[in-house]
Each structure stands twice: as structure tokens, then as C-alpha cells.
Length: 198
Image (cartoon, rainbow, N blue to C red; front, side, top):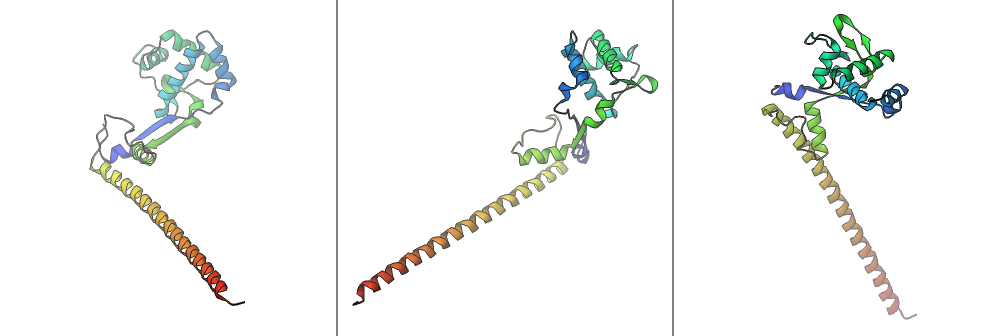
């Protein structure tokens, strides 16, 4: 488990699917196969698994074949993984690498990452203070210092908003006073006009 600075610097990876990913002809064909929705989920799980290793699926030799090992790692049936792998290889989405490892070339351009500290900051700004990347991770003094800095930033923003509101209120008051003065002057001029003999 990461502690202190390590926790804030630890990266979380995510898969950024293009909005038209499911409309891609290769994915449409995969989904239309008997059991295709399962194969699509398997492919997505494999993509997620490969993200930490530059789009590579590492074969550790735990099982006799990489398909069996991947089925174990992603909790899917071996035969479903075999059929998915077969289809992916026929489409160029599965490339054999060194020592039995496999590269999923499509993943390279789809991986994004963010640090824990950055996620905390974004959640704080969005008012999602209770949404943390992992509930079982303990915050350290360094985390608290960063959260205090974020709180200070937010407090400064609030103070600026209050200052702007005060300035607007002052202007409104001055405008009303000026308006009252103009009205009073107009009434005084009317009174003077009434008092004139002509």
C-alpha cells in the first residue's frame, strides 16, 4: 500500500474509448458472433489488464497457455477467452510478442492516467469530497497538507466571490443614492417652478 507522497503520486489508469468504438466494424462483427457480447467484455477486460504494461499482456507461465492464464486472471471461461483471442488475432488486434507475451495495439492510444492527488483536487472542486479513488487507503500528513492547500484555494475563491458581490452591492447602493438625488433635484426644480410668478 502506498503511503504519504507515494499515495498522492500513485497513478490511476483508465481506458478512454472513442465514442464510436462500438461502431467500429471489427467490434460490430465481434458483437454479432454467437456469444459476441461476452467476447466484447473479455476484450475490454484484456485491454484494462494490459494498461499497466504498455498495452502488453504478460504471460507468467501460471497456466499451460496464455489463454488459460488470462481466463484465470479475468474470471472468464477458457473457451470464451480462446475464441476471443482467435478473433482478435484474425483482425490484427492481438499481436504475439516476446516470451509468449501479447500486445494489444489498439490500447496504446486509449490509455489515460491521473494521480491520486489530482483526483482529490478535482473531486473537491466538484463538491465530491467523499469520492476517493480507493476507500481503503489511509491519508497521511502530506495528504492532509495538500487538502489544506486545496481548502485554502477554495477559500480564496469564495473570498473573491464575496468581494465581487460586495462591490456589486456597493455600486447598486451608489446608483440608488444617485437616483434618489436626481429625483430629489427634480422635485426641488418643480417646487421652484411652482413658486415662480410667471
